[in-house]
Structure formats: C-alpha cells, structure tokens
Image (cartoon, rainbow, N blue to C red; front, side, top):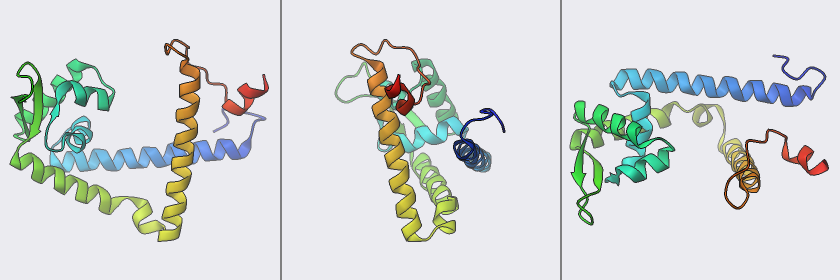
Length: 169
C-alpha cells in the first residue's frame, strides 16, 4: 500500500495482511448477520448477554455509550430475542435477558461462526496453538503499552509512536 515509503517492508506487509484478514472476517460476520436477521452490533451483544446482564455492564463490556445499549436492547426486543427485566438485586437496574428464541439464535449464530473461522480449517492444531500464542503475546504487548500511556489518571493523549521507538527517545 505504501503508507511507509522507505520504512519496514515486512511491517507494511503484515499490516496489510492483518487489515485484509479483519476485513474478510467482518464481511463474513455481516453475511451471517443478514442470514439471521440480527444486526451486526447485536451479535456481539448476544454473545456477552449469557443468562442476563445489567444494561450498564453490557455497555461497559462493549465499550459503548448507554444510549447505544438501548438501541441494542430495542433491536433484540423487536426480534423477540431479548427482554428487559428489573434486576432482582436492585429494581432500578434493568437487566437484558435473552428469550428462549434468543438463546436458540445465539447458539446457532455461534455454531455458524465457529464452523467458519479460517484457522479451524486452514491451520493444523499445532499452527492453531502457535497463532493463539502470537495473538495473546501481541494483545499483552498492546495492553501493557496502553496502560503505560494512560498514566495515573488516564490523561495522556493517543501516542502512535511504537513502544520500541518511544523507549529510544
């Protein structure tokens, strides 16, 4: 793609490959979403709901605004996949609970998603373990970097300097 002329060609190729891979996964997710008539943004929510979750907690786990959680709840309720219930512990808290139909659709969605992941059919078990290890290693690195940039009050702005380069400056 050439966004880093004179830069690290291998880093560029990895970036391009990861971007294309994520784009392909997103396209598959969109197709699955259309097949099941469940908006893409609801699929991840359904996965997180389980036996029920406080709407505030769902918003935090999805990293989204409370008003968007309401949009998710509305979309699931309209399709008969979830309902809002008062929390048994605090009636002021609304809990989003999957209906029987919602649990069935969730199970079917997850079955289809897991059967279609490319690492399940393109990689042997050893390669799958290697991939998982590499993903976890990169996730730990980016999480540690984000934590170090946040500082005590999380007030630092976004620093796009790679950690290794930042350490040299």
